[in-house]
Amino acid sequence: MDQTVEKQAMAPKAAPTISESEKNAIIGGVLLSMLLAALDQTIVAPALPTIARALGHAEYLPWIVTGYLLTATAMAPLYGKISDVYGRRPVIYAAILVFLLGSLVSALAPSMLLLVIGRAIQGAGGGGLFALAQTVIGDLVPPRERARYAAWISGTWAVASIAGPLLGGVFAEHLHWSLIFWINLPIGFLAMAIINNPLKKLPIAAKNHSIDGLGAVLLVIATSLLLLALNWGGSAYPWLSREILGLLACSAVFWAFFALRLLEAAEPLISLEVLSNPIVLAGTLSMFLLQAANIGASVYLPVYLQSIVGLSVSESGTAMLGLLLGTVAGATFSARMIPRFVHYKRIAMVGVSLAIVSIGLLSAIAGQASLLEVEILTTLIGLGSGTIFPVATVSVQNAVDRAHLGVATGVLTFLRTLGGALGVAMLGAVALGYGLPLSAEGSQTHIQLASALPFVMIFVTAGVTLVLALIALFLMPEKALRGRDEHIAPVLAE
Picture (cartoon, rainbow, N blue to C red):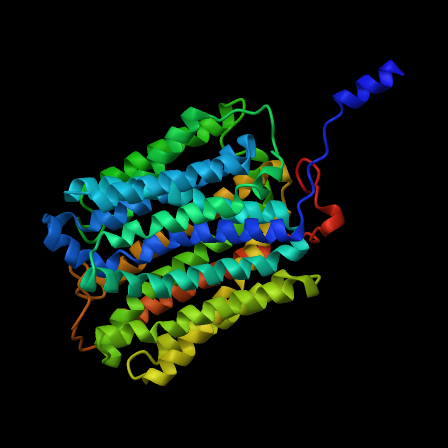
């Protein structure tokens, strides 16, 4: 009798049941926190001229954007690992608080230097919000049902992409530029209040584990050096300058040190089991390549609309809605179809194929395309590309168990962001190589070109990158999606 009581006392307690209302509250709260981070990538740009007039030192304006990008990208995979070890609730709270601290520093900044520091702090929190939102949804919903929430994530990005520039412009022009940072405080505290109680019921996936501090430092340094090279190459410095080559060389050295650390550490920052999983490898690679093509092309599409189609700056911004809304529609359609297909990756393969054909047609008629033709083709590009987001996310999360979910999602988020940065740099090099006169300050208006050749080559390069993404998807193994009864996977899904 005593032995029975002792065994019952030693047995692990079952995780508290999370009701549907609590689940919806958690998902709503984490998406609201993710909206914070996404909004601050788009809300700042319209206010930059006003900020320059208020604080001076306009030559450092790019750092307001770059500082956020550097820390957000570098920190994303770290949050995934930390949340696997210590639980989602304290880590997502820490990410929100770091983000709000950066917002406060930015709003009160009396100088450009402090504003850049505030933005870097914001990014350190924002990178976690991107990764943790998807990870928490992965905790709550089995893979077979998870795809529809991926469409909510795409919708969150769409809201940020539309609302950010509008709010930034209104605040800077009619109120005060600091409101673009003050607005984060009530939204952040609201998100924390929504998720506070229900998130306590979410169990910690991997207990009695540690964080590899040296590996984390090496990853942050390697990523930061690479992103600096990608941001400065072709704008602040020529690509073959000593500065850019030096940054790339130093980044390569730290990446090599990080790889060695993964092999030697008792518990590496990113599990070698996760990295060697063929589904994780192919899924993250396809997302990396797709973002390189999409983000890179979207940066130069407004320039094309202004210089070749003849639109104004505001008109070109409105014309971008086709690509944006098409991406959201593609992600939503893909998410709804995934549970209905056994071979669900074919949805993304058909979608990416549509995007490849559409961008190929756009490159073929770039010199004489009408606005209607451009709108139709860019909408189809977005529609096709959007299908990959739910497929890649669900496939990667379905390939690992709960204990590795944060790491796998963090790696996916990291490569998605890094792919966008690489795509902008890659297509920027193509643009400069074919004579597109972009200034270092990023002024892209009123460009008069005798030929559309630079844009033809930009679209062709983006199309080739999409072909590589399609190949990665084709090579990705397909694993049956776990349902509600199979939500707890073995140590590593086969």
